[in-house]
Length: 313
Image (cartoon, rainbow, N blue to C red; front, side, top):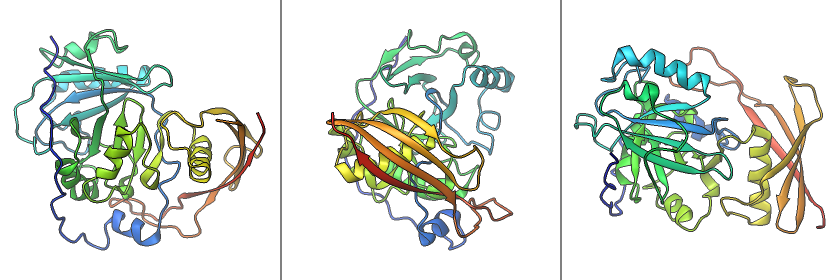
C-alpha cells in the first residue's frame, strides 16, 4: 500500500519569529558571519519515518516510536550507512500519523525517493532499503529541521520556515546537524543541504524548480567530501554554474597530512569546457566560540579558502 500524494500547498509568507536571545547559537553565528560552506553530511542514503508528536533529544527513542524496535532499527541503519530521520507534517506535533516511511538515495545517478506505509514500526526492520518498494516521488522533498529537543534554534527558526515554505512536499525533521545554521533544510533526493535560510524559503524552492541550487545558502551536497564541497561552491560562484548536476568531483588529492592544523587538497571538477582544478585549504577559525546552544566549551570551526584554475578541453 502506498500513500496518496499530499495535497498541494500554496505559497505563504513566514510567520514572524520573536526576537531570539542574543546568546542562541544561530544568532551568534550570524553575528560572527560563520560560513555555511562545506558543512553537508557525508550520508547518501536516508530512511524517513513519519512520527508526529513530541521528540526528545534522541528523537527515535524519545518519541511515540516503538521502543522495542528503536535499538535494532538504529543498529541496522548504522550497519548499512543509512541516515535515519523522524519526520512530521508542519504543525503536526499532535496529529495522527499516516504511518508513512520513505527510503531516499542521494548517490549520483541513483537519485530517488520512495514512500511506503507500514502497519507497525517493526515492519521497518525487514523492509528493503533499496527503492524496490514504495511509490516514487517525481518532485523534490523538503526537510526542515525543527528538532527543538536537540537545539532550541532548530525549533525557533525551523518551525516558521516549515509552515511557510512554498513547496508541495514539506516535512519537519529531526536533527540534521549544524544547529548554528538554523533554519536548516535538506532537499531530497539529491541531498542538498542549506543553512540560514531566510524568509519563507521561496528563493530556494524556485531555484530547485529550475533544476538549480540556491547558492547563497548552500551548505553542500550530501556524500561529497568537505574539500569537494568547498571546491564546488566556489567554482559555481566563479563560473555561474548552478545546475544541480554541474561540476561533479573527478578527484581529490591531499597535499598535507590528514589532521594537520592547516590542510590542503587539489580537487579536480568536471566543467562544461574541460576540467576545473581547485587548490583548497582548510584551517581553524581565528575565534573559538560556543558552536551550539548546549555547548559548554568554545571550539574552532573550519574555514575554507579556494583558488581555481580552468584547463582546456
